[in-house]
Length: 96
Image (cartoon, rainbow, N blue to C red; front, side, top):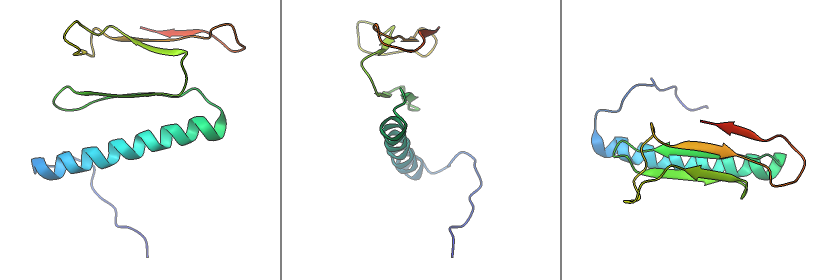
């Protein structure tokens, strides 16, 4: 017997919402790491919680997150990613 389908909408109960966020965030990070390992892919994930806390994953040192402020907070509208390649094969790509 399979799992039941859920309706994708905002969870009203704040405790349940936080638990679901934490579990799904950890699952997404695990999948990103597995994808990077299994497929030899460069993977980057950035997640902002509802309180503005930043969670990130980068599979290689060629990925940098730029734009943080002095108080260690990061705002989505002022941050940007730069994906680069330090001399190896592959494309250089920048996202602003």
